[in-house]
Length: 112
Length: 113
Image 1 (spheres, rainbow over the protein chains, first blue to last red):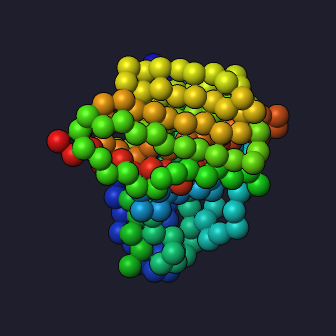
Image 2: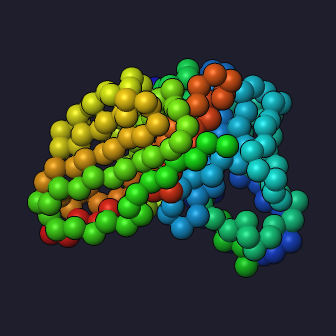
């Protein structure tokens, strides 16, 4: 069966520090991968998506970047965090179109 | 840009009451999904509706997709405290959308015993 791992679960970082959140998927190949951000338990905002290794599309201009160095690995990064980067970050994968979106358990990022 | 307006944003009811959550858009979606999320976890899929006018039932939950595939509703009958959580609708545009989903703002449901 397929599983998705996302870490760390919580992170507190000072303003100006770098960020690296990692997500890996097991049990499937060539998934579509997504990074979402959720503010205060509300709707999800799509940040990045990837349809293959090295292929990254950004949905909104921001202080973050994403990379996909391997088929089932998706990384969210920042060189210098801003206070506004605080939030709940969710990684997700999807197989064929119209199939469910499978989410990790998220990372709660607090920038202080 | 496709938008999904979800209402109400908050719902606080007593156990045994019925409720309906709405999801509306001016855009047509090829499919619409409903998710439920617990605090500190990722959303989990409840149902996918694909055909205009489609109705799906999941125990006490009834999901409907509008005829024009622009809106959807979630109706819960005889709500229970275990139904408490964040409910999210999400629409897929189809075509070359690469499986991206547009999410509504969510409805925080609290069912009091």
